[in-house]
Image 1 (tube, rainbow, N blue to C red):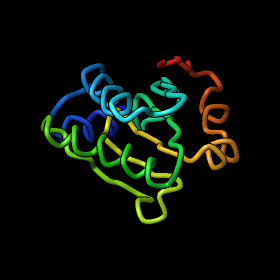
Image 2: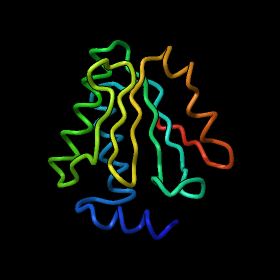
Image 3: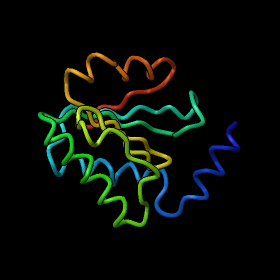
Length: 128
């Protein structure tokens, strides 16, 4: 299973790992993302290595945060593999390969509790 992930990531050109995470963090911090958490899921799934969870204060803020991440990644030569949820802008997922970003309204974030779900055996890092 690790091989599938490795091939998928390697086939996607651009920044990897720590550089990509730094790019994402910068894009979120630029627009004042709230309560940014980084979850290391490399030992839990073959989908990605890290998940970033962040809140926006309104649907407009959630959309702006997600758009900024996607734009900065594209400018750095690492366009998103997929973006989901942009129409409703309550929870937008940006798949960048090694890093998956979840931008959510606080109520949605609390309801789905991704940090609790993915932290079993994983490590959560405070970003702020």
